[in-house]
Length: 191
Image (cartoon, rainbow, N blue to C red; front, side, top):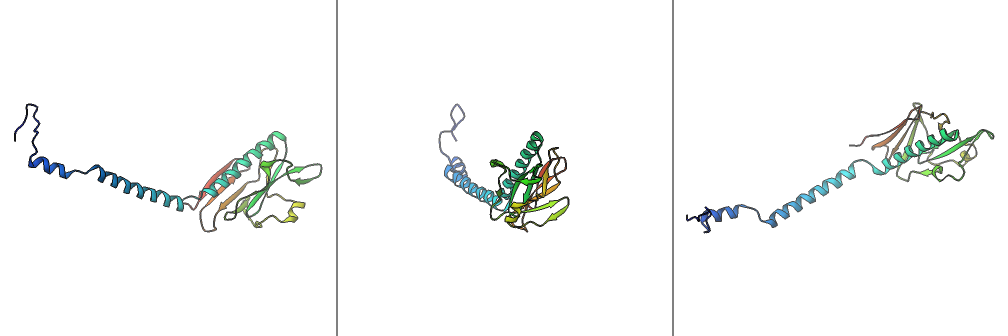
């Protein structure tokens, strides 16, 4: 095979033709990358469908955030708050020592009743006892509410677990609160 001074042959011989046909074209590589991308996309979507329930996670995080704010407000204003739960919602009350009763907070959008939404359910365990919750608030409870969880002006609160789930057999998010007001969110039953 003839070579130039630089050592590179300019002729196409049988060896060069064989090497050229052994590689992949740019089009073939793009097709393979596109197929891999489709498989990765399907895998990510299927994990998202069977994985954690984002709506339940959002609702439990919202509850924790509001409880943190209410606890700070109780400390700063020297007021006692109560939380009344149903199977699908929760609402806040303040204690009026003059009237000696629980009252709905006036003109406070943060502490209004919050509904979790139709597919989500809430379970409550207070001081290691499961509380049977009504599916909705009873109109009689409006006259004389009895909150299950208290947030005191001292910063202490009733120890409880609030569990939010989409179905009774599926995964759930759990908010655990201690007497000192510390709270932790965990998940149970998710892959």
